[in-house]
Every structure is written in C-alpha cells, then in structure tokens.
Image (cartoon, rainbow, N blue to C red; front, side, top):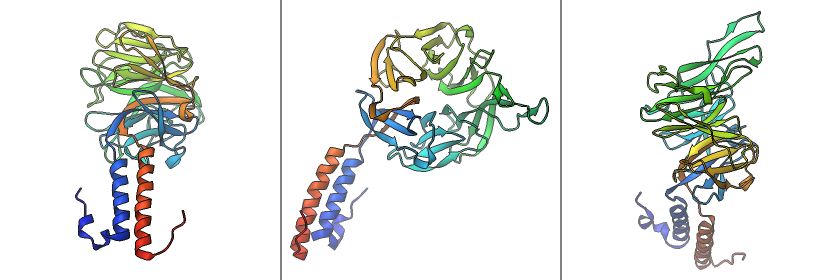
Length: 358
C-alpha cells in the first residue's frame, strides 16, 4: 500500500511525528505469519497461541469469552484465513490476524458442536450431537430417538446445506449409540473421516465418506482397534486417533491394520486431540494435565511436554491445530512507541512551546 505521508502539509511538525510513529508501529506489528499451535483452552474459554518450535506461550489469540466463547472445542483456519471455533451450538469466526471476534458464522441446527473441518470445495463440516429432522417418537412424547453426525455449511455464508447422519442416537436424555467426536479431511483421496466414541454397550469406530458427495465409501477395514476414537489426524498413509483418553492409535488407511496403543507413554491423562505439526511430529492435547505432549510420528516415542502444564494459563485443553498466524513482538512495538512519543513530544514543544509531563 502506498503512503500518502509525503502529500500532506500536516506531515511537518506534530502530524509528521504522529504519522511516522503510527506508520512504524503498523509496519512492525503487521508481521509475516508464522507457524504456531492454537489450542482450545476450555477451562478459561480462550484460544491460546504457542510457538511451534519452542512451545513457548505467545498470547491468548482469542481472549477469554470473546464473542461469547464458552467451552471451545474444534478449531481451524478457513479458506479466508480467519479462525473458526466450535462453541456450544455455534461456530464462531475470529480474525486470523488479530483474533478479534467477527461473528457467529454458523449455528443452524447445531447441538453441542465439537470437531470441524473445511472440505476442498470450501464448505464446512461440523460434528453435531443432533441432526435436525431425524427425531422420532419411540415411547411417548418424552422419549425420542435421533441421529447425530455432521452438519455441512456453506463456507462463505454459513448457510446449512447438508448433513451426514452417522447413526449415533439418543432416547430421552441418554445417548445410546456411538457419538461423533471429530472430523478430518485428507488422505490420498481427500476423504472425510469421522470418529465416533463408544456409548453404553456400543463401541465406536471411524467412518469414511466422500468429502464432495457425502456418500459413504466404506469404513476403514479391521476396525477392531477403534474402540473409543476421539480426536483425529491424517496424513497420506495413516490415520491417528486418541483412544480411551490414555493412548493414541495409528492405522494404515489402506488396510486398517495398526496399533490402538501406538502412543501410550508420557503419562497421558485425558488425551483429547491430536494434530501433525510442521516438524512432522504429533502433538496431543492432554486434558488431565493441562499440557500439550509431543511424539515422534514414525515411532510413537515420547519427546516431552511441548507445552508445559498450565503454560499461559492453559486449562483443560480440548482441540489443537497448527496454523500460520502473526506473532507480535511487544518489546519492539513498545520501543517504537517510546521513540515515537519522544519524537512527537519534541515536535509539540517546538510548535506549541508547552512543556509536556515527563
């Protein structure tokens, strides 16, 4: 963007000092995006940003309760570069640069939103405990069955455009079937994978759907190891899933063969979600220890607590993702502000002949 500073007579004196100060601060604060970990901190209703190289806390990318954020769950960057977060019965949109609340992007039909993911065509899939239109009275007016699954929204307008019932159901207030937890899109065919956790006497599983047509393409074979899958991550050959909160499983996408306890070390005490970092390692959010743990993606070896327990106020972390977002440098900005303040102050003294307080 071209500057108009040279075109204004007001750039001399006070105006020039202020304009220079503002211009310099903006130039420093509008930094290139850097890879970071964004974590839903459900205990304090915020989204926290951590350096993806060191694990150091950077800031609350979305401050506590911003836009009504409560018990945040799934989160992802959208095609427009903004951050979308599942919260209660809505998906909230925040600036991908500042983290400021923009609007409730989607919510029609949603109930207890959890995982979410954008498809290659730009539409947004969100896990919902309830699919509108699937309720059926089964034993009187107060006992109703329904289906849970995915709701699909237009990625630009937030309009509800479709759904994928996954078969999870409830009667009255009690869920009786496997309940969907997370959704991820990837693999060699850009398929849509849905994890469903166990409920009562029904074991969970991972369903596979065409991300364009929403048609089932068959579940992963040999799903004996998928007893209680939760958070999902996928690469070109394998799918990773949290399992029974104390382990992370891995399965081959082609054969379904894998290990339900691929990761079981590092004192996992409530594994909620898993994501693949830019360094190729796995990052697991651990609800029970308020930390993010790092593992080798090839061997499953524990590499340490990447985000230490409670770092930056992290509390009850649920979902985690990697994202390219700006990293502010407060010390640089403060230095420029101080310099700019002195410069502007000097101009004011010269122009007005008044003494500013020190």
